[in-house]
Length: 461
Ligand code: ARG
Image 1: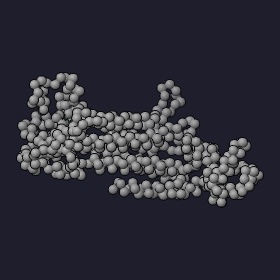
Image 2: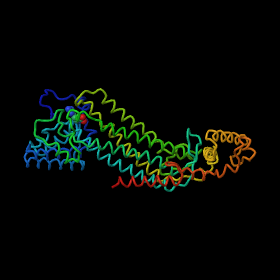
Image 3: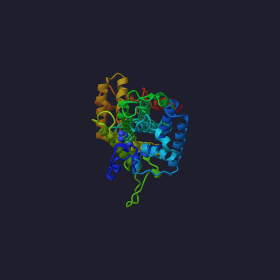
Image 4: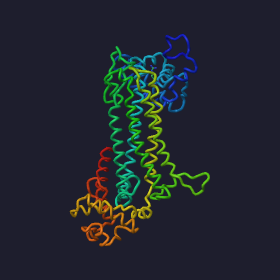
């Protein structure tokens, strides 16, 4: 089959070249956007008198039929279609005859593929934003439920200080909040109209790029045609956003895996999110948490792939840029699925407070609180730190807790301290007192939840 661009060619494409060159097998995913872009384009051509009203109507009717036929599975694209742009255009010409040949006036596939990708990505970003907002709503619900429940806070994977479980939830809430803000920000920069940039230098025809921008819901036309056809920054930004967010998801997934381990048993991941072993009958493995942790690697790979494709490419369009799509699609699918599965798994996960409580007595979680307590009573913090350090050593030697130290024990360390001075050093008291802004006290976590909920509600409007 002669190609739509075949005028100056004497030979057909080599079969291997055809296959290697074609993007139809992956870019057909954007057929809706391709046709919407064409409808806007021909509407503008009609308004500008570049095609007649009647021609415009015929072309639009043909395009709409093709859209339906693709949706119904009646059109099966093949290697001769080369890409979605030509796949649609050649069918249009077949369907409505010569008038269909007017569609590609003042347009190139170089700007067309950019319209498609931006429209596609915009739609997917809306969906991902919805998924992230749902995840945030699950986090808020759980944070509320566990606002008072105390667990071990770690640094270096060592017992550090007691914290509330709600506090952990709100830490992740902040990460996904930044992901949402980052993605919204990228969306603002993505939403400019490439249509009418043509091959690289605009056109002599009296087109109206502002009109197509309005019709397609873009903020405005892109400023410079040459930049437009060679720009893939918006995809790179999306892939960066996806990579950062997947990193966040992988961190929580990692915590899920070890919280769920036999050693910890802080949580029991719901059966419906685990798998068994084909040899060990007793096993219930946290595969989803592990897969989430693993899938971040793909998305980083997608980002590196496109960065590498773009590196050192001269202006303007180069065929290298066709390699912008598969990694983008992979990242869209992976990120979206990962958020959805994580949100559902989180919703179904409950903490095993009986197991957690067993750990709260270990590792002198209230050591810092005691030092701060001494400091409040006039002992300089550095000295208080050292006194509590000696108390820890003494407890380790005697194999006991702070509460078991006697007045003599304490005074042998420093004459200023006594059991009375120690006061209430229960873990609960320590947590309740951490009311500094952003701290872990239940009252402070509830404030964070309130602010978080207000922010989320303001987005959903
Ligand atoms: N399939 C191509 C792509 O995705 C469309 C642009 C082709 N342009 C060209 N001059 N060969 O990049």
